[in-house]
Length: 167
Image (cartoon, rainbow, N blue to C red; front, side, top):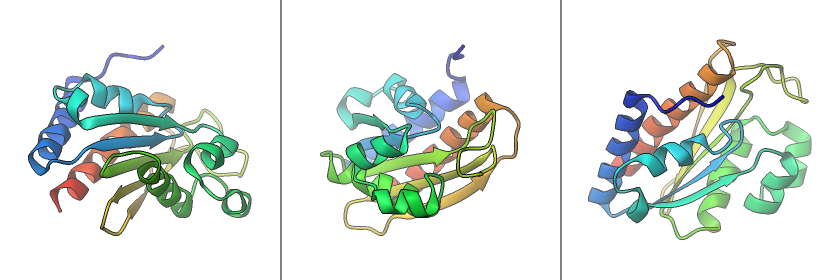
């Protein structure tokens, strides 16, 4: 069961959208372990219809390649949960949309490690903006449960978006 978004999460999404509006920037998401929750959260915030182009949910390696252009060779060599894949997802989302800023989340929410042996709680968040270098952060939330990993990833993705938009 998916819980309604916490007030703090919605406030953070609204803050991101206010800043994006002030900078005249639009957004796109590319998500794996969060399964579209970040795009959904952003869509609930005031101003979303003017600033959010949508999101890519690329849960499988194959869809990361087909939808976002993540190289299949990269996925074979490093798996889906790594810095290079988060970077490729964010950059691929920008290339395939009219947005100026993209955020990508790839990780292991649980309940088990992934097929490549990555532990529950390992997440990479990439943020790309046209004309600027892509940034990627690595997070290890441990195993507080699937829902908590996804909430932490969304919180940190919003913070990363806010930082990139502020540049």
